Length: 154
Image (cartoon, rainbow, N blue to C red; front, side, top):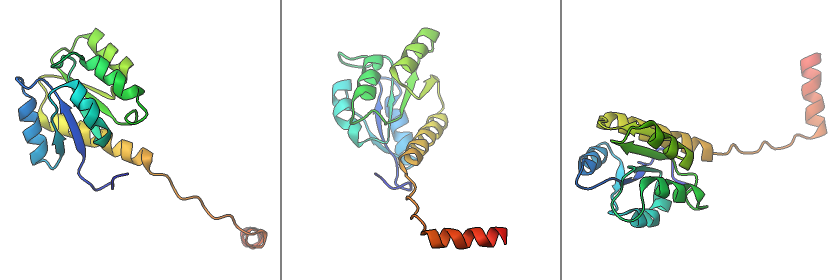
């Protein structure tokens, strides 16, 4: 598990002819390590390294965004990685399909880079908190418990 203070690693899978490169540059300047695969197949290989995944609904290659999300969410290696969908297709049915497939956040374009960064940081922080398990308390001896009980009642 990565440290809570480590910069997040994000797989950014968007159409390259769109604004994907602009988002990637903004995130890098904000301290995010960004991996930019060209296809969903390549993104599936990179996904286990990621703290979060940002994807569109329409993707280059043979796999669309909904299928990509489904594959991420059904793999034991990646099913706990939060997914942010960033798409120009803000239709209600697209949102519903993405949420049913397992996305955590659905953002419509145009989307300010600051808003994307805020949501990435939020889902990564929540995922890291979920992965932190408190240490089990040591069991107390009967004598210790008896002394504590006497102090409280006496």
